Every structure is written in structure tokens, then in C-alpha cells.
Length: 321
Image 1 (cartoon, one colour):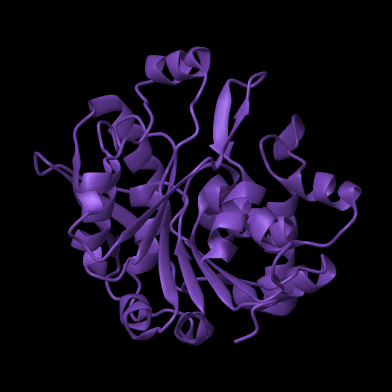
Image 2 (cartoon, one colour):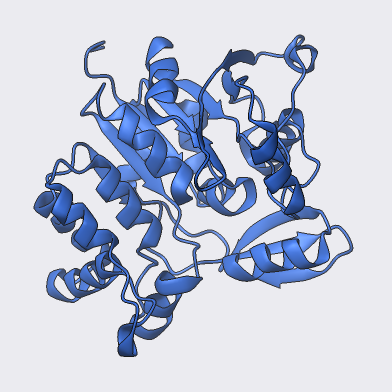
């Protein structure tokens, strides 16, 4: 094991994953980001529908997070058109769509884009199959589509019973399974529990690879709950849901934020139905999980947002190696 360049696999999607990657790349160039492809909203959803490609948004964010490129290139790949027929479209997503046409497959497009942007590490879609995420609510209602699940959760405020993918049994990329099995550390999250992390676990081979991997398994606890989706959930609830979706007994460490969040920021979140993800040390006392409390959040007063602190989080993860 190379302690100075450890093999790390991160699994998830959304902004949480890319935030963490920005910190981790300062400690290792041996990073593999395994990214969900269940997204069907916004610019990604339009390209997915019209061009029949995998949704590029989360993958683009991870590529940029690991890129060693000029600031102007990052601005370019994050640029969103504000008018005309391209209104709402993201340039980076369009670039990945064009590269798919040039390279012949989305997987090769991701590799080529990573080379163009001098990415430190590897970014992989968890599967190259076209999957849809579906959720069964506690009253038996079935909702299909990642975007639709998020919207319905906010609207109906009914707990999610379980999520699954259609068609069932999509196959993981062989490179994904190999990376997990060889990893010295596998990190789940941070990210939306039902729509960013769990979709990866529903792809054939991923749970088995996690079980067989001798690397340390870490779950990054979310800082805030999500309206509808995880409303009222504490950290123990998050872990139970992950275990119910097939990874019981796999998580060895949890990193939880213990930094206080300013009252005015909390009030803004509470207006939207969100609150800090609470936890009790006693919840994990008689388990095989070690709870690590650390100040890993960052407050953005001007935006009234709280996010993970990429450097503080990376330091906690690397300390476990």
C-alpha cells in the first residue's frame, strides 16, 4: 500500500461527490469516482432523451472536480446558455454529448474528456445501460424517474419505502468492480440518499464487490436532511436505509459533521423543510461502525447555504488510511 498515493474509490453523484473530490485530489492521484447515471432532469435529462446518451451532468461535475486545468476551461465547462434554442443547456454536457458521437460510446467520451482536461484519477459511470430510478412510497404509490421522485417527495411529503431501477439487473462496468475490489478505501457519499448513492448499489455486481473489497468502507453523513426525501431522518435512519438496500454490515466508519451552523442559515433551511442530520453516539455503540465527529461543513452566508468543506473532509478520510 502506498500511503502517499492511496487507492480510493468514491461512489455517489450530485454536488456532494464533486465537492469531496476537490479535496481528495490533493492527497492522491489514485482516485476513481463511480457516478450514478439515473439522473433525468434539467439539461442532462434533455440530452438523455433527445440524443439517447447517459445523463452527463454528474459525470461532468466529477471530471471538473478532478481536472488539473485552467480556470477559464472550468468556467467554459460550467457555462449555461441563457437564451436562444440552447437556453438552459450546459456547455460541458453538450461537449460530452459531442464526444460521444466522435468516440462512439459514452464511456469512451468520458475517458477522452478526462484526457482533454488532464483529470487526476478516473471518472466512471457505474453502468453503461439506460436505467430509470423508481420509488415506492409508504402508501404503495410508484413514481419513476429521478427528477419525478425528487418533486413528488417535496410535494406529497410521504416517506419512501424503497427505490429500484428499471430495467432490473443492469450490469456494472467491469472497471468499476475492479476498482472497488482493489481499493484501500471506498467512500459512499456525500449526496442524496435515495437518488445519488443508492442507485449505484442497485447495479449488479456493486454490492458483491463492496463485500469482497478489503478496503475500509466509509459513509459520509449528509449535513442536512432533504425535504420529503429524508425529512425527519437522523444519521441512524440513513444507515438503516443503506443497509435495507443491500449493504448490511459493510459500513465500518461514518464521518459526521459536528460544526455548529448559524441560526439564520438554519432558519432558511427550516423554511424549506430541512434540518441538520442529527445523531447520538449511543446509536452506534454496539455496532461494528466507528463514528467520527468532525467540523466538516462550510457555511456560505451570502448564498445562505451549507456544504461539506472539501479540504476538512478529505483530511478526515485520509487520516483513516
